[in-house]
Amino acid sequence: MKKGTLLFKNVKLHSNEIHKFRGYVGSVFRNHDLIHNHDLSSGKHIYRYPLIQFKMVKGKPAIVAFSDPAIQIFTEIFLKLKEVDIGSRSVPIHEKDFNLEEVNFGYLESKVGYQFLSPWIALNQSNFKKYIGMTDQKEKKAMLRRSFIGNVLSMAKGLGHWLKPDQRIVADLSLKQTSTNLKGNSFIGFIGTVSTNFDIPDYAAIGKSISRGYGVLVKNSV
Image (spheres, rainbow, N blue to C red):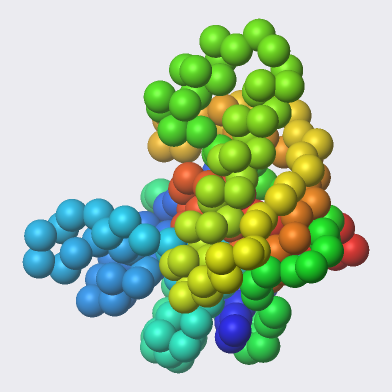
């Protein structure tokens, strides 16, 4: 699978400003629904795995794209994006670094270790209430494991990868709970490590709000 990374070396952002970065780029290139994931005619949200994701990569704001359709949009962004507005400040873009590579993606016979670089928002509102009400730590861990596997399967489907009938995703998680804030709303996330038998490209993300920089995974060796 193709993966493209567009790194903005001179732009300084905090991780909690990534959603503003995404919002600005989405407004400038509003004709590309792969950036903002909203239907151009109705304005309704398009529920799919985001092929274009905004995040911090090695301390710098970046846009990461997966698959050919998303990477094609990068050419326009690379050529036309000259500044980025973050709140009340406008930041000129002097340095853009574009990297295109072929990456492995899919089912593995053995497990690979990953770490979350940003909080994984694993639970929806109803699952979160159920999780908070649990007293058995094994049950809580089992719920997070099911959520992780479901997130991986959703990512695989969104990127056009289908598992064979005899292939099953397994995962071992070592996580701790953390609080995070998005647009003034408080969320519960999880950070830590996980091992699973699925090859996930570095800086791909899973869970909720992944296009805004949450749930970013890298292999433990990175």
